[in-house]
Image 1 (cartoon, protein in one colour):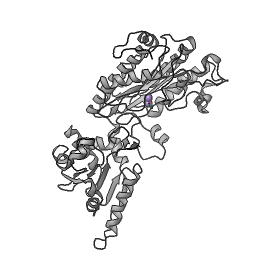
Image 2 (image 1 turned 90 degrees about the vertical axis):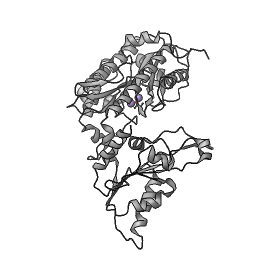
Image 3 (image 1 turned 60 degrees about the vertical axis):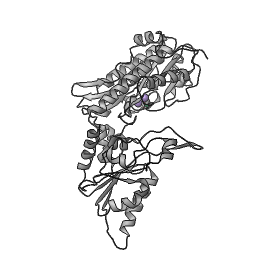
Image 4 (image 1 turned 90 degrees about the horizontal axis):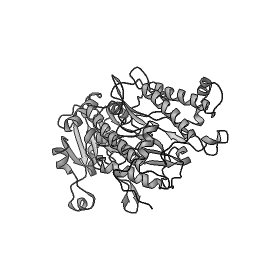
Amino acid sequence: MTNLLNERRQRLMHTFSPGSVLLIPSAHHALRNGDVDHAWRQDSDFWFLTGLDEPDSVAVLSPGRGGEEYVLFVRPRDKDAETWTGRRAGLEGAVATHGAEKAYLIADLEKELGRLCEGAQEVAWVFGRDAAFDSLVLRAVRRHRTHPKLRINGPDRLTDLSAALWPLRLFKQPAEIEALRQASEITSEAHHEVMRLCEPGRNESQLQAALEYVFLAGGGERVGYGSIVASADNATILHYTENRMIIPDGALVLVDGGCEVDLHTADVTRTFPANGKFSVPQRAVYDIVLAAQLAAIDACRTGKTFHDVHDAAVHVLTEGMVTMGLLHGDVATLIKENTFKKYYMHGTSHWLGLDVHDVGGVHDVTSLEAQKASKPLVPGMVLTVEPGLYIAIDDLGAPEALRGIGVRIEDDVLITEDGPDVLTRGCVKQPDDIEAMVRTTPRWVKPVVI
Ligand code: GLY
Ligand code: MN
Ligand code: MN
């Protein structure tokens, strides 16, 4: 791991000239209420480059600065504080365990930053994520520019580090792919357990509990994002997270959840009938979404672009909308005029890795849309493929039998020389396999009636 982290730092530093200074702050604890914090999770950029799982730390990379190429600012060891809130690496651990050439106390950051930035032509960090950090860096730069003795005019350039750093995270190395594979396997089994546990009359919360139990009991670290357990027309709310309704008989249940391994997350959605049998209209919608997903996965190949994957899904979905009587007219026109967005209003994919909506855009275009559209798929990239159809319960323009149906099917795909490698292929999605899974006895959790 130490070698991998060092290699990442070296690769990043090589994209800058000697004398540049790169700053990477950790996450901070976020207050939830009173003196209680939200669950801790390290900043992905900081983790990617340091492997240090502590708040209130900053990594400084200075290519070409002998003896101080890799500096860590950390909290001091403090027996009392460590009794309350956990172990700290301290100055010694930052060097001995985490490979920094020098370590300083985080309290001295502003002062030392002034020194480290002295004479630097370029100072880079990811702008706009932490207002306090942005101000601190600008204060340090200003202090050294206006220092009566120094009167140095540098740095010439303040650079957004994301342009250099995020492409490194976009192309996954073997260790990252292995973490994603493990997260995918645990997540797939957790979705199976949810299907096994489900029957009409259970609360959505019980399925969430089973999902997240298998995440942790199966070796995952935490959820990669808030789990969605949406039954009946709750499934037509894209970011439904209440997860508190009794599941009615005859309902579909849409579950979108993934766990993290080594902070890399899976992102999987399955939709299944609560009673183990799709109704005819539910099955019609499901079959179209599945066909769209398979077509989109097939487009996950070198030579195609991120946008081609979306186009493949949209084409099949829009044809299906016409077949089912949701839309009327010519498929090409319905796509061109974005009419399909009434029932498919989100994108088909996002990058996946340390963040569920992972980084990796290039900064040579001005909009996110253009960035993704122009992105050719290359081995090592991992993206989700997650088409869906969402028919609002009060949509009087839709055939009555379809109203209130929401279906999404989501898998995680690694681009390889040999085509798409579906990391989450272990999770059943053929309708017959899903129905059989719902009828199977749970393996991990004991069903209880509440
Ligand atoms: N679970 C978030 C997403 O699918 O994008
Ligand atoms: Mn997703
Ligand atoms: Mn998802």
